[in-house]
Length: 600
Ligand code: AMP
Image (tube, rainbow, N blue to C red; front, side):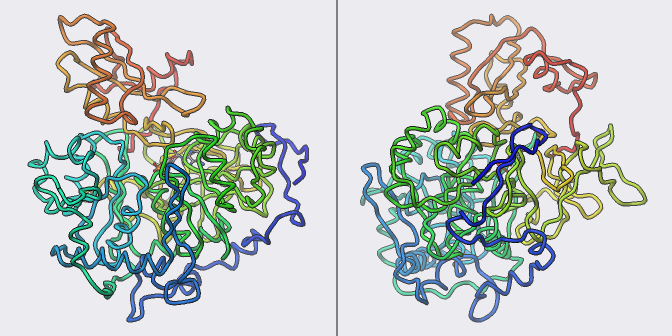
């Protein structure tokens, strides 16, 4: 790996790839050629397809490997807290997911019904996700650090029929609001140990009664497979619907953007409660038939290096917040371990600072490859590739099969159109990232919110809500969110959800929630609160509100900081100007308070 001094928009030197020094020949060697030759139908032909016709994500990820030479390969390797490993081969995973699918059938769960998980990185989550897909039901993960409010809201919108969780999570977050979830017929506890809570089932116990292989549901490419919740600036959480054909994109991106090769050992550090932990923590690598490492514990630099070394991880997919934490701990910590198996590092979810890309060279002799996508896109859209020079600070270039452009919105927030088509901006201009609609993992709707879904499209383009610019060589650079949504430690947080929780406290008259920059987490959730009439702002009230928000929303979503104000800035029509608050906090000019009023 050599560096040259060609200046980039961030003035960081380009990291030029020396193809002769790459450990493995990259899957995508010639970017322009790959784009020219690419077709999604060719990618579909790479999949096996269900024996009787149709496509099912779980069959592509598991059963087809179990029926061939990969049967005895480790599919999933769970690293426990003491460092010991519990592995499931592709054959094991087929048998276990069959049993879970058989259980859903025995419970009378119908195709298309929703099965939710509220779990950490335990084997049961992976088995439930894939077993649900085999049964033809829809899998919906929930982040286990959510408090009761976000859980109830998402399960109500999704109409969850089944929930798989732990005893503690059930007791603390579900039991008291079970009546508010009339559609929830079955709760499966992974740790009931023969003594389930009232109203729940002991998963191990009910599984014991299920035998034999199942016939995978003959799902079609457009059948709903996954439901992933995400947040907008306003309104309730949005349930992004994904279909079984998404596996075509998971397969392609696993090969081209993550550069997975048959013998790889792959570690995706994302929490399985979010979309990355599903698309790339489960589906994409299994479709490629590689071994997936899962760490059951929380992030800790020393532990992570030990796992990278002991598991001989070759491809590592992680996130800027985690990399910044590792960077703080010092490159020498990485260098103290034998990380010689590692050949490719990729990152997603938040802006990746150029410093971190360069730090990768110091710590691992490898740069970090940023890539971009979001819940709605279902898979990686823009990426740096192993064979391609890196411009630190850039998200890279669109995947083959993906057409990306930059579009303008007018003062009203509508995309600027000329003669019925959306006006595209020139290189160097800042606008909204748009993707030509129609790739296989594109979301097919927001559950029960057709109008909101349609607002995301114009002139055949999907409008992402992110602000970017493209340079003359086709590299995309992230500029910021076009809306007020917050990214904290990689989690997407809707300000409205946090404000609504605070407003339920009697001492709060008004609340506005924004993200303020933080060196490690990217942004920290910060609330500005106008106390109710007659209520005194005080440290005790601040503590009370933080505790109140944490109990309702969970620690990952609740505000870290609360400031009291006499009045919140508002438009004439009474809408809170979060942008103005942010500008004031950051000492920026208050003039630019525009938002993309797209209602996403
Ligand atoms: P989510 O839907 O939770 O996966 O969040 C998607 C959002 O995260 C995007 O719309 C971006 O705002 C942000 N994001 C994802 N990847 C990147 C990246 N590589 N650089 C900057 N922001 C990113």
